[in-house]
Length: 233
Length: 134
Image (tube, rainbow over all chains, first blue to last red; front, side, top):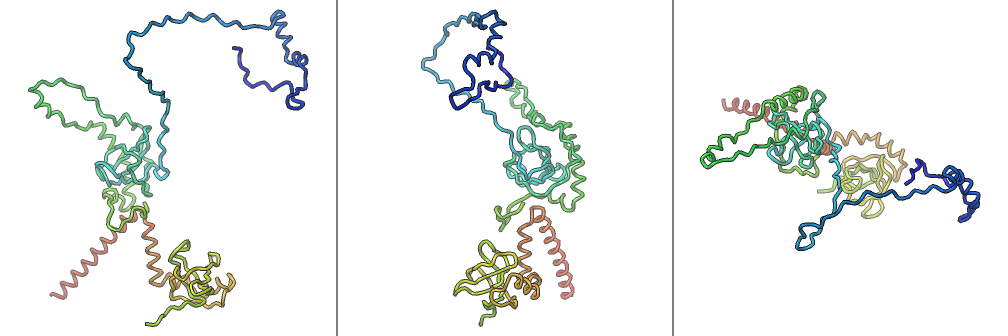
């Protein structure tokens, strides 16, 4: 194919009225410079013959035909969009966890990870919630904010939280009953250090606000007379 | 058991239903047996069914259907706003509004304050009990 122009050609033959151009065929021939192209090519208009194609690979008949025609599923090129973070959730917001082991605990939001989950910490010393990932849908955002400017969360991402791959050991009958001994998994020391580092600056800003420490230590629960649709969080 | 609060021109009433819920309005004229013409400094004068109004003790001195400016001046003279906010009914409504707008941290602090107050009261009570029994 001939090379494409960067800008489409503005028509050199303006319309007098619809269907009637200003210039005749012979005038247009000269305007487009077809005579010059022919002259460059020795009196004939340049032709581009189809290039000889490489010989196609010989297709062998398949060794196996399925008994019935199997339908191929349609191709799906859909890419999910990145999870939108609720406007009420900003770094330092106090969130109330609604499900799971830490149901009702009030925790501090640090950042949103690339998978869309929220990175959250108790702080551990106050309410026992470690650095943890939490889904936005299982969280109520309160309007209380804590200063998290002193915290560095760059190094935490989804890979940090994946489970360690257990090497599969072949167990013989006798060893089956002894295997229970190694089941206790100790938390690696560096994760404990990370927790302490993140919580150190958080604790300082929390202690600056009266009652905030007790607030984070307490669990949230619905009491008699509380109507969730009327509560302001 | 006679009535003490009457529907009359100048009676201040509280709207208890509808778009203007919670507002203080002045009855400016009576349309018929069920409806009144009602006006307030921050709203367009309109008719309202008496069922939407709860009469208060406050009454101001105006003529039938005064101009807006006259109404506002009369309300200033009678000091309706302060009388309302110092009355026990008005104070209760203000507290209700404040409690409803508390956020989660506010409710927690309120709970701590209640517990503290109850503790102090109980201490005093125990002291008094000891004095009377001694």
